Image (cartoon, rainbow, N blue to C red):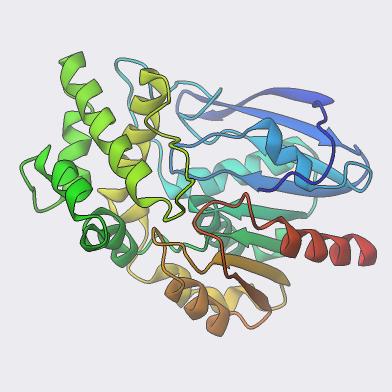
Length: 315
């Protein structure tokens, strides 16, 4: 998410008990009486960051950030030596969003999502369309099995050397996410750490074609590597806990919700086909293709800024 406004600090924050032993970190910033906007971070397994506050006009928006289950400052943290992820599914995360909305006393809100956050935003909006005023989505995904296969296997044709190391770490298993999922929960901490490092090396290899791309995953602290790898493989080994084609199948439920989808032409991690299919299924979702951008939202601020200005102008 590109920074457009000065850095700001939260005016309120807390830990929300959502059951199953989970407590979610949340924060609000900007105008307490402004238009509510909630930000859904990527992953699965990522976290919110201070920079996410900066794409919203703090005079106009009540900005809500939170860390999804087992992520960031939420507890229990997936980077702990032993952690149970059984109560972490897409359905749990959708229910968590509703609990957070109710906890903050918000009737309806704009929902922003990036990458995995797009899938979560779409499932949430299709489940509770009456609670969503607009959708702002960047790096479009739907959580479908074809996307999981692409990012863990098919895109290896673009990065064959790096993919060989990635797949070779688990003996070229038929189901790579499931094989990594097992290693990431191995009793031996060295086995867990090595698997996380191998997964992160692959993530940094395929996430960008830009020659000036800087690694993100391989420079993380080992506990953060373990956390994000555990959560993402937990989801991808289980089809993101979605029925085949579910997001596109249910896109008719988005009728009446205006939105914008911004996708990079050079997004090799998530080809443009998903965004185009969703645009056809949800005509109210404006599709903007950024010609020189990849999977990162850092260079996609201009389309979002114009859209948010329109939204704020009619609120």
